[in-house]
Every structure is written in structure tokens, then in C-alpha cells.
Length: 296
Image (tube, rainbow, N blue to C red; front, side, top):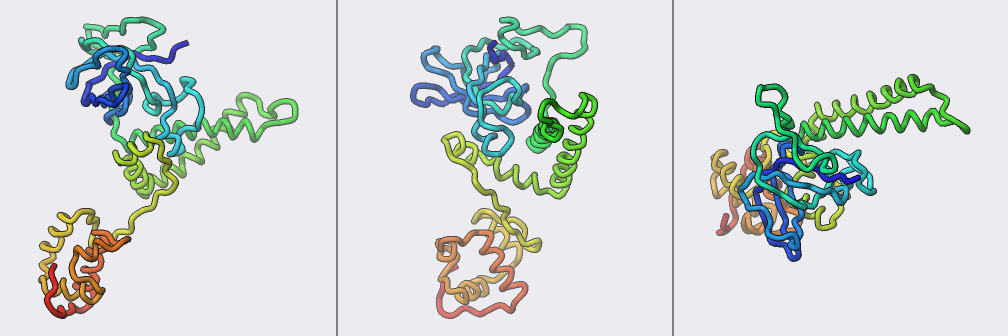
């Protein structure tokens, strides 16, 4: 049985990549996020045109290393139980898209079901933002884990000690506990921060090339300073605080740096750290006058 599907896709990017084309596309079936790194083998002929809407045949060939490393999937062959957006796909065919379409497995029909003309369900997959998708996927995973835990909990030497009804009741308790903890983390903002870091395009590309995410650390940010990540943001922050150049030079000199560039060139120092240093020195401690001619 093939696991390929035929569904709507808007082609955003087609990139020549050795023996294949790498395609980025918006695929309503997979949610609101752009879906990246779809493979089109050059032996198939010309790829779909960038900027067009197509009815694409997508054939999953593996569970995405990105979601395996996040812990959402375990390693193994594609078996059809995975959320569709957590797989990597080959695009094996496409044709012009001509209206609302229900996505269907390609082994059921070679033509997508047309939507009714007199209203009713149109087969359009509701879109959700990335954090909502994260929550939904995690809760689904917890539901499956709850059932697995219940089966293990009731395992006997010959058979399970629970009846089917009892098994489902115990599974619900396990899943409920897992989801309660998940929602608590989401309400505290922990999962959102983790998701934002893992969802970085650079991280996605690195994982696609074989890298493994082994640790995610939350950057400590002063509530007084806020998040400052670039030199432009730092410049705007300094201007907004109204700090004088000579006082800034004094703080840097006190720490042994001739300029902000020298501070940032030192391994381990960051723009955020520089903003924190200046705030501490100019707002909390007394300003230190500069010694000699130093450049900001």
C-alpha cells in the first residue's frame, strides 16, 4: 500500500541542488508553516514553476530527523501513523491546481475529489500557528504514550490483567497526567521558548544536513533591559536610554575593553551581555569617567 498523497501546494522556492531540486511550498494539509526541502528528482523532468499552485503527489520516504531529534517521533520506517507534517517527502508528480480539493491517498484514486458546488464542507484543512501545532502534536503523542503505558502497566505473564474498558480508563489517566504537565509548561511559556529556538531556520537546515540537537539553553534576559540580539538593536537601546558616549567608554575601560567592538570580539561575549553590562554600570552603579581616548 502506497502512502503517497495528492494535495494542494503553492510553490514558493525551487532550488537546484545537485541531482535534485529542493522545493519549499505552502501546503494547507500540513498547517500554516512553509514546508521545506521537498525533493524533486531531475530524472522526472522539469520541476514545478516557482509561484504556481499545483496539485502535488507527495511520497513520504522517511521520518524527519528534525522531529526525531526533538523527541516527537522515534526512529523507524514510515508506517502511516505519523503526523503528515513530520515526514520528509519526494514530489513525484504535479499538475495545475484548479480549485478547492480534498487531499486523498493516491492508491484510492488518481483524481482528487471535487468539492460540492452548493456549499457544505470544502475539504480545506484548518491552519494553525506553529505553537498551536506544537501543542496539538504533543497532546496526540501523549495520548498514544498513555495507551502504551497502560498496556505495560497491566501486562501479565500470559495476558493483560485489564479488560478493554479498564485499559482505556487507565490509559486516559496516564495521558491526562502527561497533558496536564504539558499545558502547565505552555502556560509558563517554557515550551514556547523551546519551540522558538528549535524552530529556527538555521537549526532546521543543520538537522536536515545530519546535525543533532543535544542541548537547548534559555538565554537569561534582564527584565530591565529586555531582549537585545543585534548591534542595531543595541544602538537603538543605547540611544533610547540617553547614555553619554564618555560614560559608555568609561564602563568599557573599567572592564578592560577599548571599544564595544573589542568587547564583542572576545569569545563568549554577546550583544545581550553588553547591554546588560552598560545597564548595570550606568543605571545601577555610578558612571565611571573614561581614562584616555577610547573609541565607542
